[in-house]
Length: 463
Image (cartoon, rainbow, N blue to C red; front, top):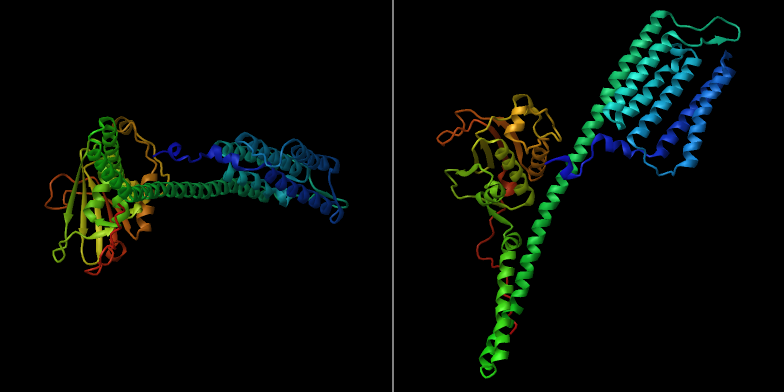
């Protein structure tokens, strides 16, 4: 299951989410803050500033905003490149203003972190690295080159060199730390959002199939009576039209087509009837239904039962789409990585119902076991992996979907690697991956129906 199959967005596409209007509003806020800072520094503290150049720097931002407002529509979405250029412009403009007002001696020098933080949250890694490198170079230059701050009647306002060095180190570290932190959190949020969307899509597809099957079964049930009437009437016409061979042939055609409709509805409604009338099924049948799409993929799938000695009867469990789809994803993962065999064990007792899926493959990578079930988990594939499974594009999304769906049904999942002692008494080297799904019995085994309750009155036959 890949991002393209699910319609998920990569980081370059997410860069197109930002509206031009949003960037314009943020820039107006920055412009207002810069004008207030310049005015306070000049009027309240009497600092001698290069007002012409300062107002020129602010005026460039004002002009850029006005052009963007009148040339482009308000709902324009910026591309990745346009977003990068906008943030780069803001970074250069702010750095030039800081150069005019003391460089790192200016307490507002920490504001260079703002454009970098924005880039880390919405732009690609390439753009973030470019902006971080630019910010680092500009901060380094400002540590040595800047126009000093001078009050009207006093000495130059400069911090000791040790403090300037500390300021440079702090900003440099913050550039890296805040970028990594913001990007990590944003990536996790995007991954979880994508995975949840994919989970809802998977469950929605399963539910639609169930609903469709129910509709087909209902149609087959409702059309049964009129088709039987057509067949009965056509049979009577065949007997009454012995003296009219042409009309009798038409009556036979009507009867044959009624039989054909009955057969078509019966074949279409077979699965749907199960969905409509069998809301529960034996545990082994649900497992078999989940495994069925993967039985012809060149791997042997064995289903085994390990009953409770005190209750050997196979439990009837709720036949819910999330259970079937979740188990199907786990079995698919086992088939993808098995060498030749996959085993699905069903266990139950008075408290729990357990499904254990094992294979004879290489098992889970030991360094990833703790992260299994996380969405969109990637790792670099080796050449051997590509040769063994050229069609497989592992993302961890299938396991996340399975884990989410099964946990919604009340299950708890655990992942491990097998050993020679696993499943004693059974054949096969079950030394690959093991996934164990455990439900509290009450969550998927419905209470037994009282004996003697019927299924309702038969529908009258309309002759």
